Image (cartoon, rainbow, N blue to C red; front, top):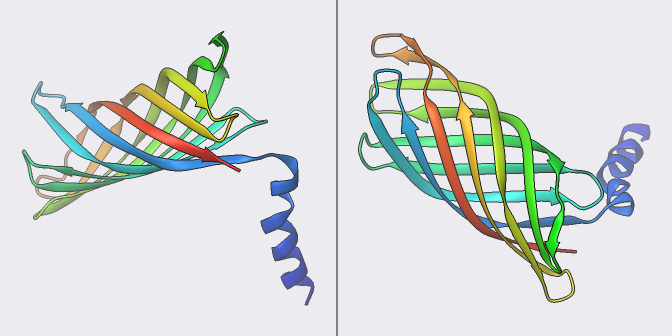
Length: 167
């Protein structure tokens, strides 16, 4: 019984402390491998932003038509600053982490690493809708399972365009 009460407190209590913005975003992720080869993946993501705390979270799925791999990525950022440039127009800059899985036909790669992110957001309809554009740079460490079993260090440059709906 106590576990059920604790579960509902943890689930619903944070909503009294802050509001959340949730929404879709389109992603284009350029990748530069250690051997200077280039590829890109394209996909969709779901983003979550908290209003009173400078945290941003994203879950994305991407497809790379050049190498036919499928990527799943999680990222979390702490916005170091988010000043208002003009009314309803903000600039943000932050740092965070990225964690991902790349699934190929003959191998799987697990990667993680630090990232820097910056971008602009526009708040519309009295704070209900937020449109944003952001660019990140992620220096990952990638471990390959299957194939050659190598470890490599790809630089990823994800670009996102999205919207968030605020409660």
